[in-house]
Image (cartoon, rainbow over all chains, first blue to last red):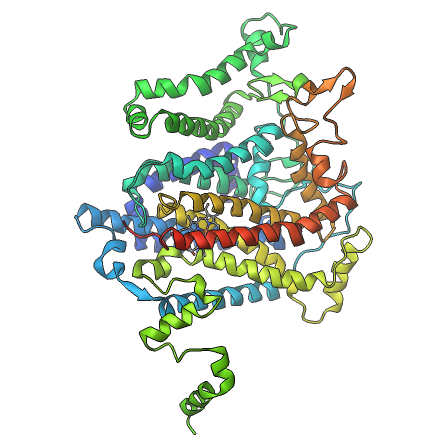
Length: 360
Length: 260
Ligand code: HEM
């Protein structure tokens, strides 16, 4: 019963909105999220829940593959450090509100200390702890080795290494040229661009949320919801043929998922207008092309005119930064938008030009 | 003779003095000397702000990333003694490593270390972001960091192929398959069909980016050799140089960030 419910809830159609909502709550109430009490409660609840998950043979068979251990370590570290950063931010923000300034700026913390022993001992401790951790890990878990390479027999599912599974999961919604080339390129370019776009001088050298709310929200949304969450989906919830399987579901190779995805051009020309698809390619896809261009070209200036947030942003950072920032945000949001369109309208491609290998 | 006596006597030998040219670091002069006089320790400043030494501030994640990189270099070198990157030997060499090396955990440390490095570099970036340490004057070093992040992923990815088992070739097949969809430069990418003269196709599966990456149209022996060289020589060298740049800039940009 309960397992059935968890299986249902973890379907991306439900778990993605849930993850987004949880993300919103986390930042909206970061001062509560960042308390020690909240952390203790979370750990207290997570331990029995995890045990319950592990007791399930189907879930256990996924988790026990040695190459999936790093993901558990990743999830624990991401969870802990997200909490820890917001914990420190909450303390500093309260101090700043009281006029005390961030804890990193107290006279005591500004004082200079000797690297020996203060810094080198911290490093020595970190190195020893890390070495011990790696050795224990290496003794408990043997490095995996499967059958010798066989180019004629593909395992199903064939998964990329876990750190690329977010990209592989994007393939559900985008063609490889977007999911594998354009979007990763934009992630790298966008990351490098961050310091040149974010002109807010505050929050340099100390933890804070309030003074950099927009930058932190945008970054954390991409990192936690669009990257880490998609990795979780790719690792735990995708089975043979990249079909969705709940965490407690057996990977049944015969599970058939009916999918009748349609293109925007088909929806408009056939369903709505009842004319049938025009022969001319550009004519056929004209609605999708216009929509996509409008999305990138019209929204930024409109946003700067129509909303206060946009107006202030444009004024503060100047137009070049503003348009680059908006472009990156729109490209980021194209993923959740495409997901939602898929779930609501079974939409396959907004622009479908397989003749030119150009599908959006 | 007490322990302290022995330590003192050792310190007074010619051998010791030839190696460490200063007394014990219990006064200011020697504490400066121990950092400045040691090629490894001199990566550090002699003194730094208290906020920057705290584990709660840096989480030591950049430091650990570097340490794991070093550990991977050492274990990787040891593995290279046993491993030949050919379709005939690669898999069997790994099997031999498993079965004939008593108490061998080098492969384990190398593999788990590689995963751990991906995690620590992500967390390091997250820390740098959350403390706003990419803001001026550290914009450039953030960029160097992003390249290091990409190279770390590529190191891990190229290494994934080397055991030459099913896990390896199919993970790399999936990953490298994306390259053929590169706009203009991949044979199945948008725009590739524009690049043709009459019947002559300029971008085909015999010369596109995926072919250059794999040295073939599928993950075969040429791909193994390419990934081996990228993994063991080329990418580590570039990473090494960039880490040097990264550390130099951490110092030149004013050390670990602190409130202005
Ligand atoms: C191989 C990968 C990397 C290594 C070995 C490395 C190492 C380090 C080390 C040892 C520090 C000193 C402070 C600390 O430990 O936090 C540091 C600082 C820094 N790193 Fe990295 N790093 C790497 C990747 C990155 C990445 C991916 C980024 C960002 C995208 C980045 C950006 C920075 C910046 C801006 C600083 C200065 C921080 C400050 O002043 O507070 N690094 N790095």
